[in-house]
Length: 84
Image (cartoon, rainbow, N blue to C red):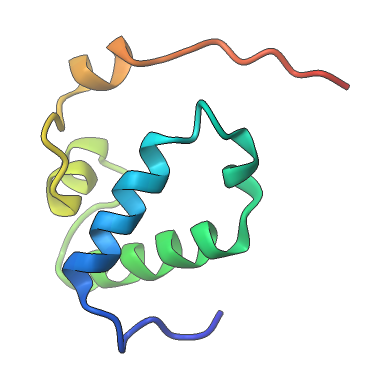
């Protein structure tokens, strides 16, 4: 992964939030290398700032998500049907 350090952190967070919000409508984003690189970079920075990225509340709050609670997360869940 190339470093994304030369990009503004707030812009990367915004881009990630927008892409992440579109995952259910564009499942192919989950396999996009750019999406993975942005997520990995943001998680690296978050960890350096003491954020437990496995804690969805901490991660969402750090990203600047409006609704960072589990209720907001679980209310938006969908069931995926895998087509083989």
